[in-house]
Every structure is written in structure tokens, then in C-alpha cells.
Length: 313
Image (cartoon, rainbow, N blue to C red; front, side, top):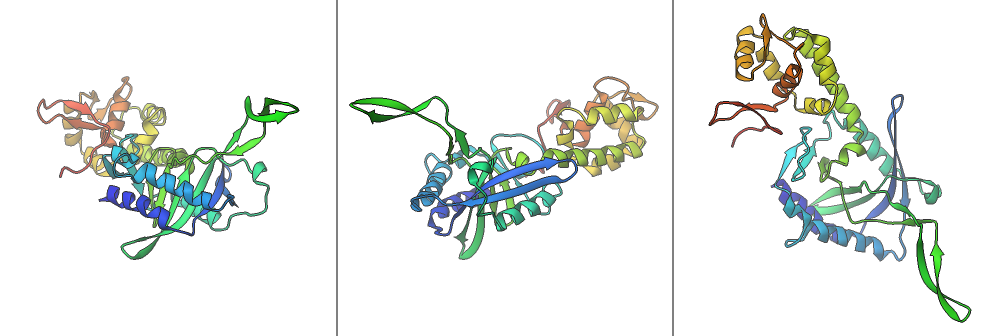
């Protein structure tokens, strides 16, 4: 139903007459976190903004060629990167909660005076209100494509003297591509692409989650070499995997009998009743097991790696 909801939102977008357009600048630092600044702009003629919204609506919501047809489902964000899935997040999700508040505050009070050519935005935002089931529903569409293009080696035809020539174009040009990466419908955030992770600086968030969960594993004393496990868990794709960390699995692994069973099933060596993380590859297997990436093939009864897992229906 959520895909249908998004399709409805795109279909109704051109019916809104109150769209506003903002340029968005995002800065991040360890000291100050993520900061958002916005600059509201107007297009001339004014109907061009409506034309942009109509182009976006057709690109995504068209019954025959709309890009939403390429997605197979809407799923809670779990750190995987399936191009056929729209990921959704509640506003209180710890991965985005702080950044979302700052983002919404910035676009609620955009600047209208700073020179937009000096603003250096990384994205643009469309804000409007649509009617769904007779209820006014805020809709925000964010494109993470840089709005300004620097013209180089581009020319326009003109007349100079008695002959036609191509004259060089230079400077910045506002280029609003009808490509949307993030939608905020009501209060729910939807990622059409994983560029949404950049919008909310989610790398910082899932690394923080990783650190917290790894400490929980170490406190349970289920591995022989805690530092080796921590090092592996904090590198590569693993921090993202901890988004789908299952504390229930960890609680079960606190029991020696359960560890013995998992060690046998997933071919994980033990020292005594602890997983031997001094052996290459063992820490990686434990991460996958705790983060729902390790399952058992129902036919072969053999361990397999999966992109993600959800309840069977």
C-alpha cells in the first residue's frame, strides 16, 4: 500500500498551487554535527515551478512509464542497499531524528536575501501541501543533485556584424533536474535513492549505533578477542549492517548451549564456549549473524548470507 500512497502523492502534486522552491546547503563537522541552510528562490515566469512539479509527477507517478513501477516494495530502512526498494523512516528514528529536526527548521525559515549565486547549495527542496483522503498533507521533495551548473565550452548562436557566430556562455546556470531522492510525506521519510543517507549524514549515525552495539557484544563475553571483533565490526560495510542489529539474537547467544549450536550451524570455531575471533573471518560471521544477514537454507540446511530478512508472510 505504501507504493500506492507514494504514487498518489506524485499524482496529486500538480494540483497544489502553493509550491515553494528552496536551495539547500548542508555542512557537517565533528564539532557541530549537521547544519542546514536554505535560500528560497522564485522562477520566472512563475508557472515554470508548476511545470517542474508536473514533470516530476509524470516521471515518477505515470501509470505507464513512471519510475515507481520499478520498485518492488516499501520497507523500513535496515542498512541494505536494494535499488528496487523504497526505504522509509519514522521521524523519531535515531538514525535521522536529530538531523530531521534541524532540516525542517531550516526550510521553515529560509533566507531570502543572500545572493543565491554565492550560496553553493548541494540540493534543492520543493515544499507543498496536497490533499489525500480529504486531509491536507505536507509534501516535501528533495533532489540531491547540485542545482548550479558551471558553463564551460558552451556557446549560443548570435549575429555579430554581418555574420552569424557562436558566442561563449559562462557563469552559473540553475539546473533543476526532475530527479527526486527523498520524499517527506506527512511526517514519514522515504528514500527513493540512498542519497538520502547523505541528506541526513547517516554515516555518522550508523557508526555511533555500531559502536554501541559492539560494546554490548563485548560485555557479553561471547568472543575470545574483543579488540579484533571491534576492529572488524567498525570497518567496511559492517557499521551499516548494525542498523539491523537484533538484540534478541545476542540475548540468545549469551547462553553457552545456543553458542554451541550456532557455532556448529554456521561453521564458527570455538575456544571453550567462546567464538574464536582470533581466526580470520569469524568476526565477520558474527556480525552477519547478529545483524540478520546469516540464515539457513530451508532445503539444504546450510548457512547462507542474505541481504536482509523480515517476517515471513
